[in-house]
Length: 147
Image (tube, rainbow, N blue to C red; front, side, top):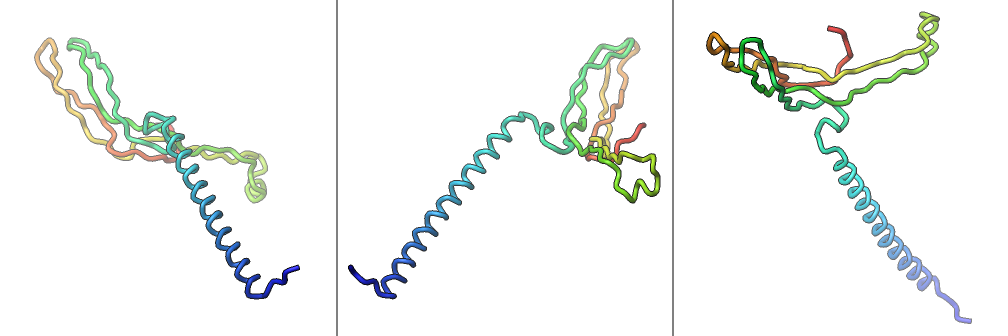
């Protein structure tokens, strides 16, 4: 039976450790590559920017009909997307303050932050008229409210 010296044992241990480091590094690289591929392909599921979470500025074209004028198309910006909404059982401190407040909820809606005017000249029976339409300049998620 062949005896191993301490030096040869340390050399083998070091070699095994290097191989393990290289192979674990390889596995990490493969895992990162797979994660990247999944992220890229899952992003392709939504063809539009507004399909991603958040509130996004998008173009919106519509046909406008005004009595006595020729129908026309106008393009303005709109806000579209998905914002945070949830409902949870109320925490004890809320129930202590108001025992009837069983559910705590929060709802955020996608909406205009700032606007600008889009002016359009329209052919009407009594001549051209300028019509003004509001268009979103920026959008954000904020607490839903009735207007």
